[in-house]
Image 1: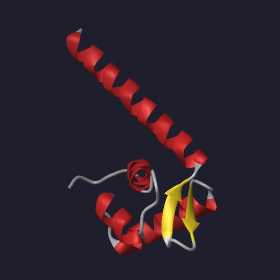
Image 2: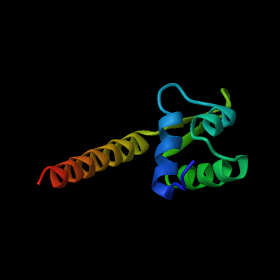
Image 3: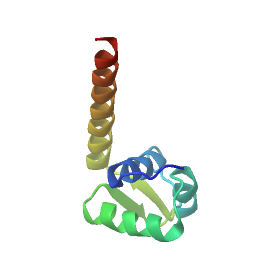
Length: 90
C-alpha cells in the first residue's frame, strides 16, 4: 500500500465510522491502519468534534461536523481529478 497523507487517513476513518457507528476493530480494518495509528487519529478526531464515542454501544460515529469535512474532502478530490483529466486532454 502506498503512503497516505494524514488527510487521507482521516477521510478513511470518518468514512468507516459513518452511518451507525463502528468499533475500533471495524475502523482499523476498514481504514487499513495499525492499532496505534488508529488510536492516535481517533483521539485527534474526538478532540476536534469530528467523531464521537458512544459509551453504551462502544462504537464511534462521525459527527455532523465530521460529515461536513468528509463532504468537503470528497468535493476537493473530485475537483482535483477533473483538473487532472482536463489537463490530459489539452
